[in-house]
Length: 196
Image 1 (cartoon, helix red, strand yellow):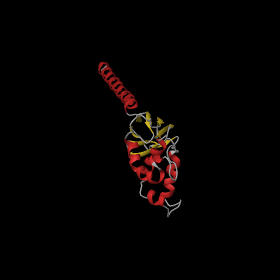
Image 2 (image 1 turned 180 degrees about the vertical axis):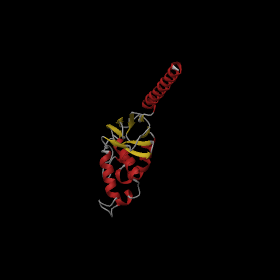
Image 3 (image 1 turned 90 degrees about the vertical axis):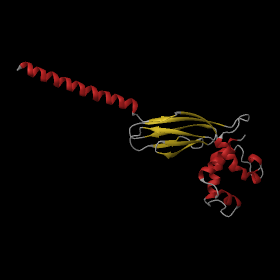
């Protein structure tokens, strides 16, 4: 009888030890593999470029905010992808926050180097801005107003004001700006800001 009780007691302890091991392993595995993460965490971009950031293992509501939208902005593409746009030369960080943790993406934005060919974001901005050259000079170098080297945030703000009719709603700039999407206005502003 004592042997039977001893055997049952040993089996019970064995089952408890297995359960504890499994629970501990799952908790440890969960901390390492299923933790909220953002990749990449460092971006070096040229003004006018953009890069996609991936998020994974989000447990709840996720928010993303730029520390300085004059240099870089962030836009949600879908539940696992965010787009970071480099606006003008400077540094910024994008902070991603969710229910249990947060993560940061550090961004350095530089101007276009004269000897380096522009990348896709800049090319798109240049193509869109080619319409501006009639009044603002080749590459925004003069004409009615010099745009080359002006802050992207200032150019974007002016374009947005023309587009929504809050500035000279019947003028030629309003007619041009109304034809662009918000993203296109940002690309145009980034392009002119990147020129030196």
